[in-house]
Image (cartoon, rainbow, N blue to C red; front, side, top):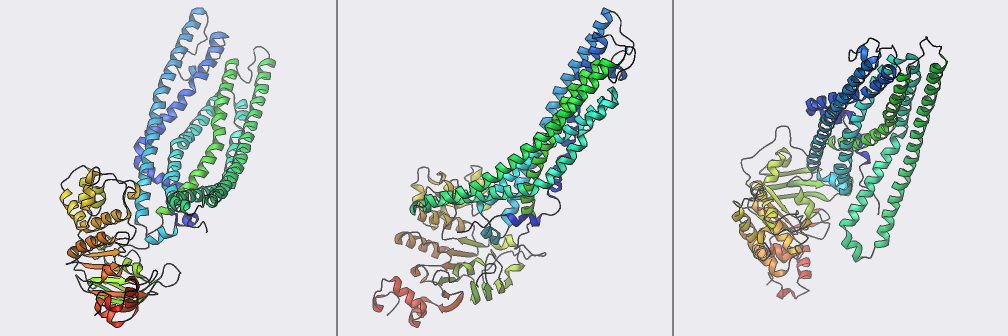
Length: 636
């Protein structure tokens, strides 16, 4: 068994650069983002103040230097030399006020920046997940057949969350790096251009190293994302099929498959961790070298410069230099982490926007036909169809069904019955011929308008976690919205549909009746109960055309008879297709079509086909437990 169904090729459908597309989602929130960025810059600016205050305090308050300093240049303290204890204390008090105001302003701007930027990231995450989910819903059935649910869940959860984390953290870090490096560079240059050149020398080297690291690590992280997506798909697939695993005692087989993919993910992550740690260590070594050089050059200048001459830097500024160096290299080292986060985010963005760039293969035409109503005539005109490049499933089928007729489809498994009826609501497009509803090709219809008139009840119906009433009401938008609000205004229609599907009696016997929670996929109901709920759901929509695809296969004979009696009443004025394994289900159909290897081999009424002694007659005898021909119902 292969592990196909991944999303490796989805990046080919990305329209433009994925990270630019991500910023496009941020454009909606540019006012709050702009204020957040300004607040973040303000936070960085206020963080520059305390070291300057320290430098001024050392030089002018402690050492009594005549050098006015940066605060004097900004007009925040007097530029005149400070002499005497009282003057020094007055300057110290002013410095304390400046520092206190800086910390107060820093707290306010920090709150504002983090709140605005993080809340914006949450809003972008919400919009992106909603758009991606909505787009996935509109992709064609062939897409879902080719891709695993776990892969898609990984995109909607892991990848979208990763992009939110990138915007939430790394965008702020980008602002932090730019504002911090720019501000510190300006201050250091003011104090000592020579030492500033030494301190800032690693900045372009770090930038270049990060760019090279990004380019080199990109394909590795892409592979890691694909590996974890495959692992998620395998886990989701196995957990969903846990009953089969237990039934066949395949614990070891599935453990080995998961272990193999876990080992691959582990090896790739450990390898990436080794490379990343090495990169960060190199950055720390580089910044450590600069620290030592500044310490030696600046300290030597202060020690060896003769009295009365200007050293490269004052004693207070030298102390401030090291406070700034710590703050300078911390965000610079963060560049390496940001490069790592950027690459992971880009990989996720490629998957998200790759999905958003994948166009549905089935869409409404430019000028779609939106009927006021559908009478229900269905015509198959020399229809052929195959899934992808596989063997033809429907081969040259021609069939005309009058409005209100019931057509039964019989034949062996794989004969093409279910595929044929799936072409009516245009779940797939034909490869050859035409499917017409009321004389018009289904490809000319508005897709939503067409599917509103066609209800499908599958052999294994899917029920949603929620109440019985919500699942029945799913067939009608107004009823569903009412049930979600706790409004019972449509409950009579819900109950009537359930009664027609022979579900009302068992529903009323549930602990909370129609308000009973049925669990994920309807796990609290039996197979027959789930099918009756699905039939009620289809009937509530009041469609012109109904497709029952083995809809009574999982119910007992008594329940089947009750369902059939309800169906007979409700399809009296509707076109119905009934795909049946039990031929008793379709014996009263207006027309029975027998298919074999994608072709129609027989058609007619029950009596006509029995009289013909062909494929249908053989199937009927087999299901009658090999009863004598004279005892078979319908035969005289």
